[in-house]
Amino acid sequence: MFGVMQKSIPDLVKAIGEFRHEYAEHNYIELDRVQARARFGPEYVRGEDGKLEKNAKGDLLTLPSMVDRITEEDWERSGQKFRMPDQPSSGETAAFMLPLAFEQAQEPTQRLIALMCVSNADVSRWAASGTLYEELDSYYAANIDTAPMEDVLELAVSVAEQFDASVLSKARGLSERMGKLRATVFGEEKKPVETPTTSSPSPDESSTSSVTSTPESSDGDPETSSSSPGISSQTSEPSLLTSA
Image 1 (cartoon, one colour):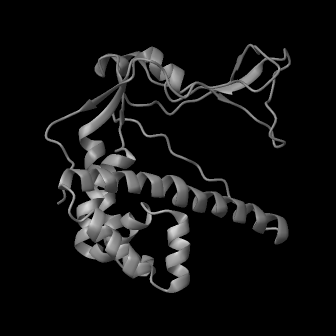
Image 2 (image 1 turned 180 degrees about the vertical axis):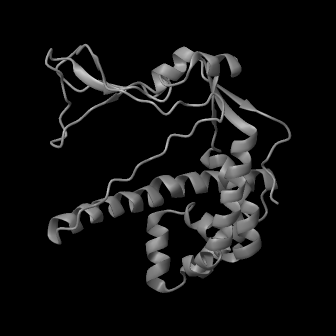
């Protein structure tokens, strides 16, 4: 099942990448200055031991964030707004991907949908008897194939989200653990991965940075807010949820 689907993965990945790129060009998250500062706070300086660095007065050392480096002229040109390209949700991506998956790998895709709908006991029994694929095909024909298209689409999106949450996330976690195991057993040092921060071309960022200090408010590591109220997501017409 997965072997047939894997043969179509390169084309699907390319199509999804193009979809995400086009989505980001037409959809964005807009923040005001307060929200931008709350989301992109200063970066705290850590030493080689991973501990937060302090100055002679005991204040935590920080580096100015990308928002702190935006000039007043840039804020004026951007209308006092900070805009970031948005990314489609897993449901939107699944809705876009479903027609392509059916076109290139209809049979295994149908079996995957049926597989996510039946119980583990049924799967184990069918696998033991060597009739797994036949039973999945029968289940799909009896319960899904005759359903209205909107119900099938909703089910497929739910299956894609569940598959990502239960299978792909587990695989990502195991991959991370394997990396740590290699580092422990074989002495391989995992290179840190830098995640670039995406921002819109306007306002522009200046290239200067300096180390500043901020008063320490607690004994633990400072917490950075990951979200703030009032963040609006702008979407332009027409909708992009159509296959090319």
